[in-house]
Length: 165
Image (cartoon, rainbow, N blue to C red; front, side, top):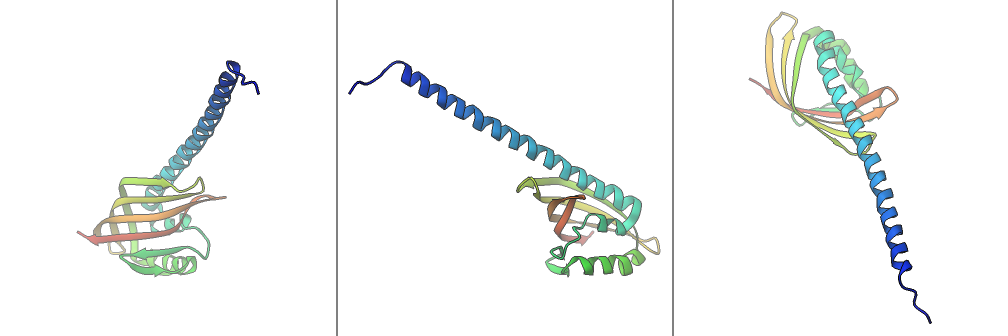
């Protein structure tokens, strides 16, 4: 049996380098896609602030995923077990007692789970103005799972932990 030396190791090295470069390109594409997705979730978070300021509490409905799987928890208590309860409460109660909301996020963290799903968390400060004009400040922490839908990013679920100042 004759052992070939010289060109075989060079050929194997070329194959190895080619495989690494293909893998690095795939990782680069995924990284770019994740960066784009993360940026678009960031845009959603800023849009929430703007829309709440302009439209009041009804604006939340534009950001809740309109699926039976949606739910919302506040301070460890299930407030809305599904989207229908959220819609009913916001449309029939919340819009009557809250005249305005000024929301500010702090230290927003977005962890991409996939290109379609993201975990979002942030400190928040809200000034909520009731129908009599009285303003009440709230501070806390917000967490949510965001889902990219055909209508853009929506919150599948969310949790508020907070207190008045």
